[in-house]
Length: 405
Image 1 (cartoon, rainbow, N blue to C red):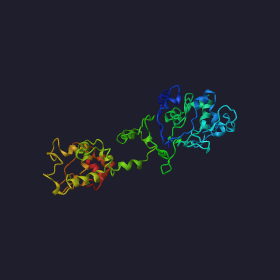
Image 2: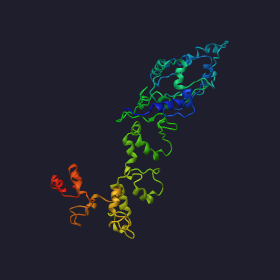
Image 3: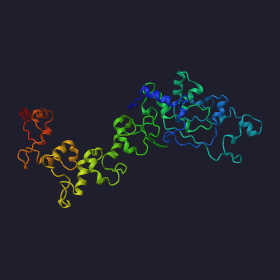
């Protein structure tokens, strides 16, 4: 599924400007997601600055990048690459040598008596799709090569001593090209694809942790603290982006009314919920089933027409005075404003006790329609007679429509 990132030319230019002349190095101080780039244990104090000062080209130590098609490839140089310059054999034999080749130079804490270092280096693979070969080819077409090509994604290493995860590109850097025009903007172009029925989604549960947008997310979807309370607007306006990672069943795990996260409603919300419920803000039905959740609770609390009369204390105080007579508090006015509020306690059959041509309480039924309704009821019958049959007995909908006209 193609996820429309909708980065306009202006947005792409803004992202490029944010990188500054130093390129992605401007993001070096920003945190990297451990889910994408797992934490490292680096026991080799390699100094990029010192090597680049001597004019070393990146591919001298990292020759594999020119053919690497996967982020799982091991591109950290081994001792055989170091031995091309560092005279390791001469150092072991005790002969004069330069550059230095003693083992402790790179292996901190190396114990010559047992010929091992206390801790091995660890460079976990990144949990993304990435082809160095393809990117270097595109950069070469644009006239970038050697150190400049590497700096396009990794930033300049001229002042970097120990290189870490901080030199790996962030999503902001990728979006400069992956805007849907220069390069694909599908999320799964870079991110791993989930292996399930919704195979077009991004895999968020990775060995390094759970993948979620953090501070500085270029799409403005930082899933930081309290995002569970604020994600509604983002979900409404950016549904395609949400579906890149989340499936609808994952939404329903909270939005089916069976869970009541404490972070959604404040303490003692049960005593204050009538106010937002009457205003329908937020929409209670988004999480709660009105005809089961609300009705059952109101019946247990004794504030429902179906509740045990013995539960009423001092009479039913749900509706104000004048509820059944025309006026400001008339139930017909309130029902027209927010029928969902009525449905939280009442079922349709209760309305039909009065508002039906077959009403036993009021022969012929109490007319709920406003003046002039007869002029358009025929059209409504022709479109969907079932809604009319809730109250009216229509032996022949066509004849009934003709009578209404």
